[in-house]
Length: 221
Image (cartoon, rainbow, N blue to C red):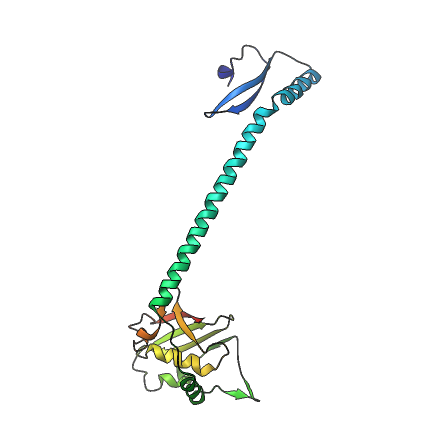
């Protein structure tokens, strides 16, 4: 810096400011001994007279920050729009499974949940073992698949099925719970995203990629 600023004697003091082209400009330079009062007075006068040099640099930085923020906001909007389009295409490609009200009522009657004092007994998280699971009775020759189902209200249910059970058996289990808000829904795996709809109903859990364990999200329609 001494060579760049051309200092010939010391102590040496210089006030510099940024200039276009990633260079600097010298606003004031002092050589030789000075009293503290004189030095402070000269520096203050320099800032008062040349303050615009610092202000323009600050303004440019603020403009750059605003421009970067606008770019990020535009990128976020474009991403959300693309995500919305992907979800819409997925919805049209895999329409939700809708059962007639009469058929739904019959299935709920056949698989009514255990009631206690006239109300459905519910827990935040339920784990069922193969020994207590009627769906696995007589299927011990096949390995079990552990399925975790997450509901929109935050509740979770976990159940074991035979790996040779079909995807529709998971739907039957959810229907048997009789939970509110599950009249029209579909089951979705998050990573990778896959919708288990009408086309996958007759696939075994193993063939559907739900073995030995999987996590599904219940999405209401």
